[in-house]
Length: 124
Image (cartoon, rainbow, N blue to C red):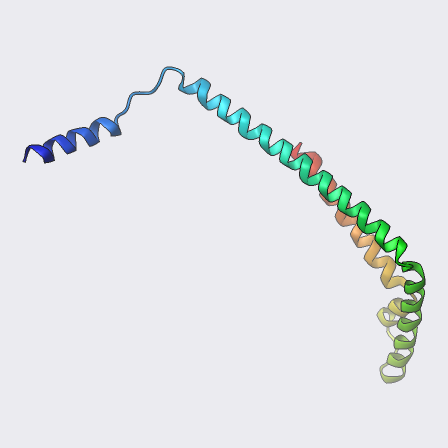
């Protein structure tokens, strides 16, 4: 029976542990370290993304992308002409077959990039 009383008293003592005198300073030091780590991580992730983007762009330019885009545009025109024979011509089909679909995608990508940059600036 004595062991149960001792265990309960011990649990109470651990549950009501006194606060250390330097608890606030310790918490602030830990907080600074955590914040510093996230800032460094953000910079590293951003630098890695930038490097990946540059490498990807150089690979696209080296792979003769512009010639392939012309071929894709010709294919899109042929597809658009085929669709116009089957269905009535709509603005969307003619816009995509005229190459505007690519510019629409590029525009949306630029807008998305703007949102990402504004979010990053807001976080800093």
